[in-house]
Image 1: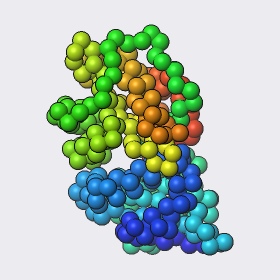
Image 2 (image 1 turned 180 degrees about the vertical axis):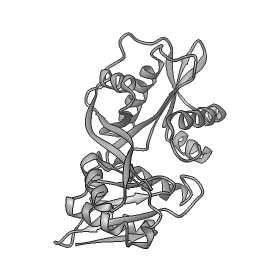
Image 3 (image 1 turned 135 degrees about the horizontal axis):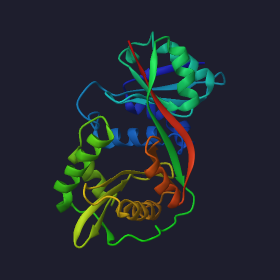
Image 4 (image 1 turned 45 degrees about the vertical axis):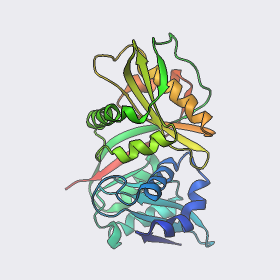
Length: 281
């Protein structure tokens, strides 16, 4: 039983790809990150140290899960057996590729297990909940306006709102026009319009391994509290399904009860909680 780490995306995909794709819900982050890197290159998430990857090989010789990291984002764990998580905690202190890791994103039980094996003081920085679409329900009451696909002419607004979303949500990394153009290429960005003006934005990732993830969802200041976010989320959820996703997913910040309530009313059901733990001291 062993971990293998590499900065070679092709090697990671060849070794861990089938195991990661076998659990597309829990591994949604690993799948979308690897897809973005394959399509847009190693700087897909911004300039900085090269991304790296790892996979766990069990006693029977089969790969049982993986991890990805695109600095400055946390080391992100997918579905892993407990023995792999404990061994990863030890590797954080010995593996050269992991020497710069200061934060980990994982399902709550694995995050707690890994933090205990890390050997460093740590604290919880963020708690999120993964939802999956159970049965799509229209918002009630229906908001005024309608959804439409974003087009290249919308790029300045899309970039402005993506920057604002990242700033408000505290999301690492710079907004990328290349990432927005990639989403436009498959119809992955929708705008909600009211009185002829865009008021809200939502996107979805390209379906990978039968799953797609909704995000970001953003309503411009001054237009909030009128149901526009619910309307555009409803529309983008249907668009993801129409694009071939059998599983439509999204993450929420557990500190935001309003958004959690909105998504439940649209037919999303909780799957699991994830936490980000950060080394301190």
